[in-house]
Length: 163
Image (tube, rainbow, N blue to C red; front, side):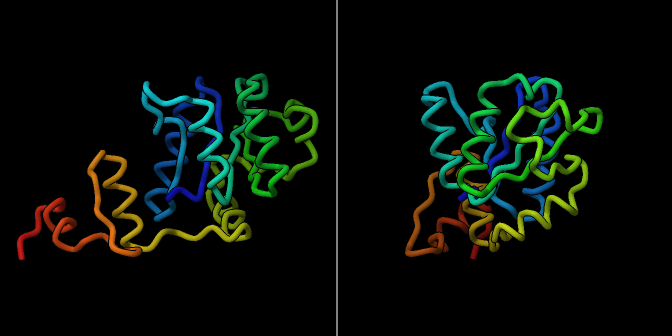
């Protein structure tokens, strides 16, 4: 399960990738559009992920301020009280789209403040089993669940562990 949604303009993929990787390393479940595959209905998949997320981190840059998709995602997150606004260092707050300028906006590289904002929204790192489930699902490994835990034998097999 991905509690964190990352919104960005395609030209800024490296910023989003670095943020997502950093948060995942810290144990957070992160969704960004790298999860999309060609057969997905992009709008439906994005809305579903944004709806499920407890927090949406928007990365405002010179590219994203003109993106209707980023604006829509930010508007949805703001309405649902899950917006964490960040910006690239070179962007002046006055360049952020009207309606979002009054939001506290953190530098996207300031991970400590982003982590504090996540905590304030009730987003916690995944436990070990959830982290494994997310990693396996991302790799396309089908998993069997019993209640909230992965079937032990299957997990051991996928990890190459022999009893």
